Length: 177
Image (tube, rainbow, N blue to C red; front, side, top):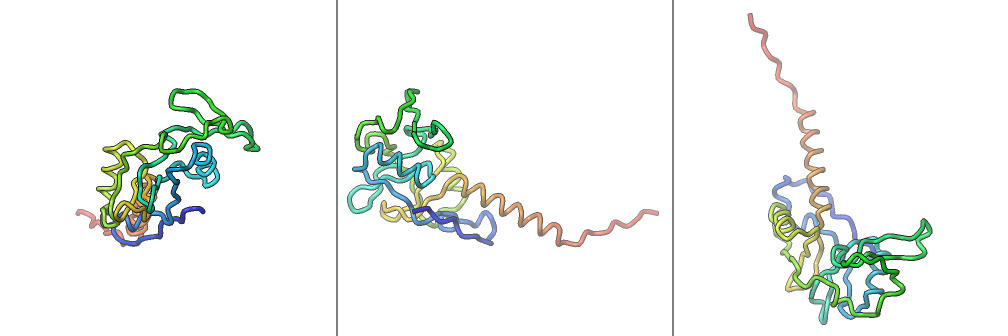
């Protein structure tokens, strides 16, 4: 299940909220999943992180590439998946133990509500040195906003501003005599 792209928004840039930028549905990882299963899921979905959920769908952590992996493939065919462990060792994913993912995830999740403004989203990411925040309602994932989503909003706002500048007639300067 790929996450959908955020919907295009025409509101002023600084009025955008998490609800405007978030991608849904959120791909989640069960806290009971093994490291191997989670690695394959992230690779298969082409995502670099996902919320880890426990009983009742409540978020208990986040697993991201920063936690335990930098993905690399041994060849162009993608036959063997490896990761670089936090201590620097290259490990073949098929040789990993079947430990539960909760041993590798980040337990402190940065969450926001859907009405959180874009400036606050960006500040939370900067302050926590992270690339994604979870949009949640009562600790249940509703969406996810990544640094790329914020950059895309900046790019759209810049494009709109450039178009507006082109549409405005230029004032003619009066020649001095």
